[in-house]
Every structure is written in structure tokens, then in C-alpha cells.
Length: 154
Image (cartoon, rainbow, N blue to C red):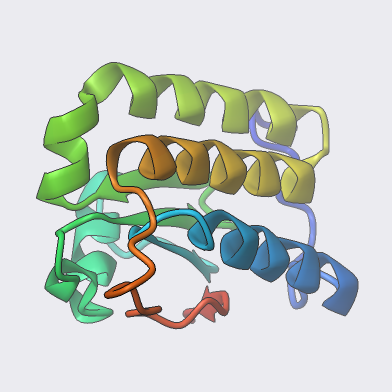
């Protein structure tokens, strides 16, 4: 049993109810900010470094095209037991490395305790609070620039 034994599900990583919990957390978090949050889940990471893979996914999903450059991606490679948070330059510069490192640590703790969905939801909520502080919702101009659904890779 490895350090990330929380990744036990092979074909279906989340139940429909769990998927909805994650999407609901994204939608609720984005209601108070102009920022965007996405979750990307795949089986294996074809790159050596999960941050490099998260970066590739981030740009492939065109998350760098948000108006305020304030999108955040939570990347998970289930079989390789890897994760990364990747933030666009606007939000990363406004926050700094410490916040992201702390969120990754919290995710790992939740995953080790076999609370995968709870860890994802809590991370999304924390990111939403941070985005609200740095990039508040603008009623006159704000729009949902990116889909809220979970993206599943191969």
C-alpha cells in the first residue's frame, strides 16, 4: 500500500452524487468571484512532473484566456497518485506559493484519510474564498467564462 492508497477506484472515480458535490462546490465558489475553477481527473500522468501536466491541461482547456487571468486548475492523476494546483499568472502573483503548497498538503491529508471528495470540495471552497478576496464578483460585467463540470481525461 502506497502513500496515496486513497486512489482505489479504477473505472469510476466518483459516484454521480460525488461528482455533483464537486460541481456544486465549483458553482457556489464562483458565485462570489470573477475567478474560475476547474477540476481535471485522469488515470495516468504521461509527464514526469504533475505540475507540467497540469500546465499542459490548463492551456489546452484555454484557462489562460479568462479576462483577469484568474483561473485555477486542480489536477488529479488517479493511478499515478499525483495532484497539482495550477493557477494563472493573475491569481498566482496575487497570492504566492505558500497558499498553493498549503492547499496541496490539505488535499494529501484528506486523500490519505480516504476522504477524496471531501478534500476536493474543501480545496475548491478555499480557492473560491481566496478568489473572492482578490477578484470579487463584478455584477455588471462578470460572466461564467469556463464550464463548471469536472473534466475527465484518459
